[in-house]
Length: 281
Image (cartoon, rainbow, N blue to C red):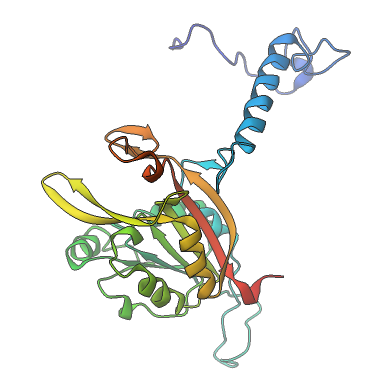
């Protein structure tokens, strides 16, 4: 089968380096493939660009940039306590672990579940609780009827606590009293609070109207300092931050806000990971 590119990036199948008819070494007395002018030119340009992005200023410099939600990675790095045994219900079992408990607030059709579940090693127990409106939950329960570790809830009060991770991806901005909602979520005592695609940055805090097809709904934008201040009041401290590049009107990039005054244009939303202050070293 021919390659769609002008040349083949890789050629041949060999058992080891000695058998492959390479004409250039990776490294070697200044003549290796990673020592030539092509490679050094690319690396110099990348380094200069990375340094400029690091020094770009702002609450979140351009060097911290992501196109993915961090939920799955946080889940993979979150250990779970061994589960109690029947003989010792308050003790820790030596071989079994309690499931990783995730609360995904405003999780849509459990959009975060499949990627998280697939990225965890086999045998890792999971209890994924998706909180959404009743219409979405009704469809979700039908679509995922045979998935045993995914649960849909149309009320936050129905989610069993505590949980290991609370995640809110592109959802908090639609809550009128967002500070009270954060307080409710914090009562689940998560070890990690993950806010993905959060519209917060170096702008004032304000509300705008989002046009969605024929509908018009309220939407928060935050000053990042205001958001972090409220989270600190709830006992959570920032451990990770990045810009998030979403897709708007079919195009990846910053928020399309050219119709706003320059001081109110967000640019990129952000991903935040926080942990309880009491658990930090």
